[in-house]
Amino acid sequence: MERMESMEPISAHYTTAYPEIQPDYGSTETTESQAKTSSPPIYDEELVHKTILVGDSGVGKTSLLVQFDQGKFIPGSFSATVGIGFTNKVVPVDNVKIKLQIWDTAGQERFRSVTHAYYRDAHALLLLYDITSKSSFDNIRAWLTEIHEYAQSDVVIMLLGNKADMSSGRAIRRDQGERLAREYSVPFMETSAKTGVNVQLAFTAVAKELKHRAVQHPNKPKFQIHEYIEAQREKSGCCSYF
Ligand SMILES: Nc1nc2c(ncn2[C@@H]2O[C@H](COP(=O)(O)OP(=O)(O)OP(=O)(O)O)[C@@H](O)[C@H]2O)c(=O)[nH]1
Ligand SMILES: [Mg+2]
Image (tube, rainbow, N blue to C red; front, side, top):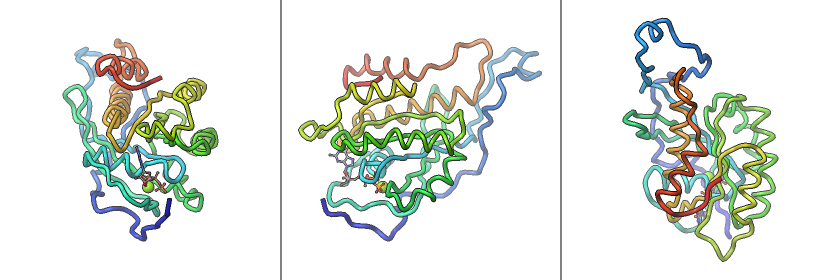
């Protein structure tokens, strides 16, 4: 495939910032006023959750974001991302609006140090490989090592095997992705930025997990992202999840 590099760091759909209000996932304790009234904690819709797309160059990070943001896939020659940029998206979860600030990073090695700087502030990381590329899958372990080195320890991580539409070129079986995800205790699904399969679900699952971390329900069981993904699978009857 011919590789073209755009000098534009980010495409036009990137929008400007939300006010920088950061979620505080720190304490599991009930506040005094909550204890008095015993009313459920209210989710603050002004919170902005930084979510970062990472993975080798060409796995489909930009395409996944464009599919999620605009519902379209732009075929044609590959234009590698240069630098880093973000898109703001509001994801409705249980009648509240979850604000995601989704950062699209450049997968090329030469931009790695730039990407590292953004890990520290990330609340969620979507880590992609390409199911037709063994090397992109093999590199996932190195990506996870980097993530553990640079990101916060409680960052939400999801592993995505992208380009699921390309069954004839498949190099990594679904169960290999599942096994790797299980080894690192992270949720997994296969996606296609081309057909849109599971794209919405991947971001919604992350948004749900972030919401549940921001609103601590002392008496409620913890949100289980794996179970949520599994339940959605049963509803839609498609695809594969861990
Ligand atoms: N068939 C198919 N092609 C895809 C899919 N996702 C991305 N592609 C193609 O794969 C190539 C790379 O996609 P990008 O989204 O630019 O990859 P990237 O991960 O952003 O790459 P960098 O910006 O270099 O890190 C492009 O030619 C896309 O059209 C997919 O789900 N299915
Ligand atoms: Mg890109």
